[in-house]
Figure 1 (cartoon, one colour):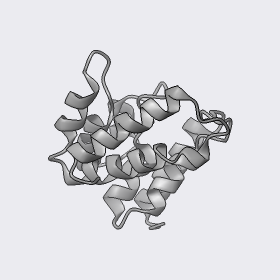
Figure 2 (cartoon, helix red, strand yellow):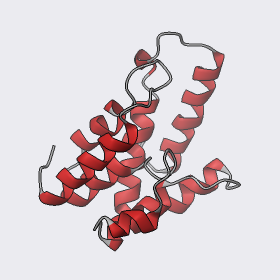
Figure 3 (cartoon, one colour):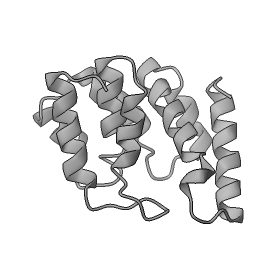
Length: 143
């Protein structure tokens, strides 16, 4: 993990937002963004990895993130990483593909979410989801 003033702020916010949430296998959800952040190579992608689900999964808004002091470059990438209601999944993936930070974080997100060993039970739904994520990785040129 890269530790700077900004990444530590993101780490703290990530924990506050996700600390009581669980993932699909019942594990603390916060491990997921922490895992993504560990694979990032610079400050801004680390911050985005930590915050990539904050707006989708909490009461936080992009304005709240700006008020917390996160730079516009981070917020712009987070807007792309946040899957808006009513947007088809692959349109969402295509829209973020040209932003280097959003693309890097999304690739890490898809790879981690495709790891079936994280699940206690691998059912048909999990296999369909893994295939969808494989297609998204191919769309991002990362398969």
